[in-house]
Image (cartoon, rainbow, N blue to C red):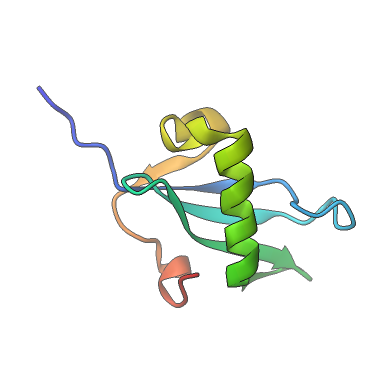
Length: 93
């Protein structure tokens, strides 16, 4: 029996910025198109949408260093989800 893979995965990622080593990112991956759909930064104890240019930078890092994250996101601590979570629905990158 074929089991359909959910279209998205969501999870946390460590800081992209050496000057902000404790900043966390929440990332929404589109598994079908192998793209970072949206991302948020944890700034001053609140989640803020990541800028489009930072989302592109994150995409570049994943493509070059962790390309298998789109195939096995659970191995990176990401969870499969069927739809875009409400926290990402308000603004997509």
